[in-house]
Amino acid sequence: MNPIDLHFRMPAEWETHERTFISWPVRESMCFPENYESVCRGYAAFIQAISEFEPVTVIVNPAEWNRVKVFLNGLKAEILAIDHNDSWIRDNGPTFLINGKGQRAGVNWVFNAWGEKYASWELDDRVAPAVLDHFRVRRFDAPLVLEGGSIHVDGEGTLLTTEECLLHPNRNPDRTRSGIEAALGQFLNIRKVIWLKRGLSGDETDGHVDNVACFAAPGRILMQVCDDPQDENYGIVRENLDILGRATDAKGRKLEVVAVRQPPKREYKGARLTLSYLNFYFVNHGIILPVFGSDAEETDRMAEKVLKDQFPDRVIRKVDGTAIIKEGGNVHCATQQMPLP
Image (tube, rainbow, N blue to C red):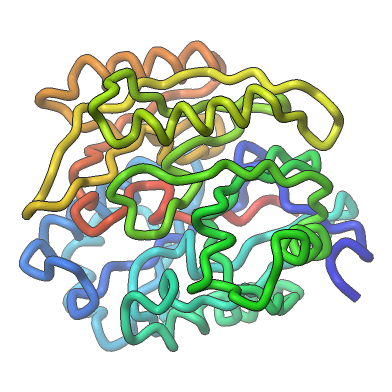
């Protein structure tokens, strides 16, 4: 049987968490290993911020504990020893499910390092089963290459993704659009997939949706927007806004779209950095928001205001969004939530 047969569903990220998982960076797999210490300090800041709201479990390579413990000193976190290649638990970790009967399960997707971009990924492909086994959570193995950052759900049967990622031939070349939708339905209890076209410029994940848009509530979507026609993101955003303007969710509702202005363009060593306020992370009673400072101070303030207006009952905790962005992601990419069953 598949999860849908047992009435499991993927809950929305804003539903109550039992804990957050973070995988510690591995210097040997980093794009810029010379930045290892500054990246580690960024991860430590994420842990400190999240632990104010809920428990944090940090996945550490057993052989690296002596190197890592210096950065974790004084932080409130549980350590879980699991071998892994890279730090992006959003993408290689399990997708947790609940069924309303006090039961929890997890989906173990196939992970191939974003279309076999980075070797090796064999350890990362084993992280989800190891986490589920450790916590004695029922496991469903899905025959689909999928990263958690490529999907976002409203908890009521609607899933948001991009064609650029899920239909990319480096993921599931033998699966059709309808076949992928069917698999998402069986494993996540999804009844409606809203397909945006492309992700943001510079995103090496082939267009993960967690940089582009996310649900703020059923029927309401936050979208990072660009007003500069000379910016590569301008056409991408216009196309995606047009799609959302015509879309309905699993319950037939028209979607309200709330705009979040993108931060100014930045590059590192000739490549664009994928700066996104939408890579924030829901925690219990709060939101962890990456901000970018310097020339982005105005858009930082604007993003914080939008989130305060949208989530008046949540504390907005800001973190340094430049801390790990050169490695290709931010706080949402670096985290994975385990919901309360």
